[in-house]
Image (tube, one colour):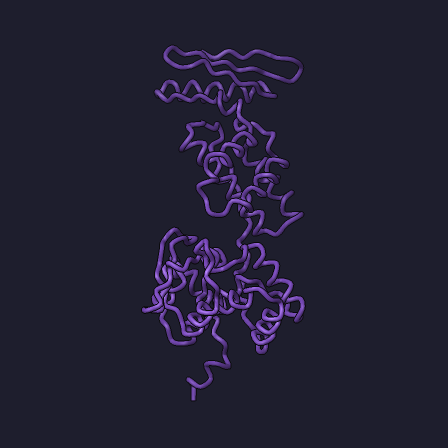
Length: 326
């Protein structure tokens, strides 16, 4: 049986009691909304469905994000960027309880966030909120009266995939500046162009992963969690033979962030614009296609699981294909 009580000037408390079910209580700004909620709860109870929103009432989005960061995030590969996302989300809408979190609040977050960052960044934030709430519902048993509100809103469109490749003369300038920069950044850049490996994969390479007899490399830790063995070109093997073996077993004596920083400084020095280290993966993958490898062969080297995603790398240079038309 439901009772509706007035609490203060603009609050109405609905309480639903039924034998065999926990007593549910919730406060609303309008009486009509409180009555509608009570009817929905009674209807669910009549159907034998137990709905207990007390935990959702007592849990804020900040609480949920903190739990996700504490229990789930340590199992993920990319943590630094997600921690930054969590910090932003908590600051903007973290004070809302899960029971009051609805599509209107999420949509306002989307619109406010889009004023400061790109649509792609906003999209990633919304997808993170969706994953966290999904974990709350499925894994932690927290029932939200509005379900997962992110599902009900329109997400910003994904940004156009980058197709930046090295222009004529850029590789020569890049490598010359890298050699002058010092350290092993030169070898890292050459190796990236030869293998299409991701930055993290390159940094995790160990000497024990190299088969010098077969000219292959075993990649254990990958973004897709699927280990693979790739062939190494003569140039890639020459680069490895130049490296000094470290006691810790890792091949490269450089940190991931240091690679990004050094690469940016090198590009600035020789006035190469809009080129990122990850673009070298795109360049290398495109070169594989230009050499005549088919899409399955390239996939086995690069580790792309989604062949549709791999198609975007096939931006072959027109000038390199002219001879095929003769």
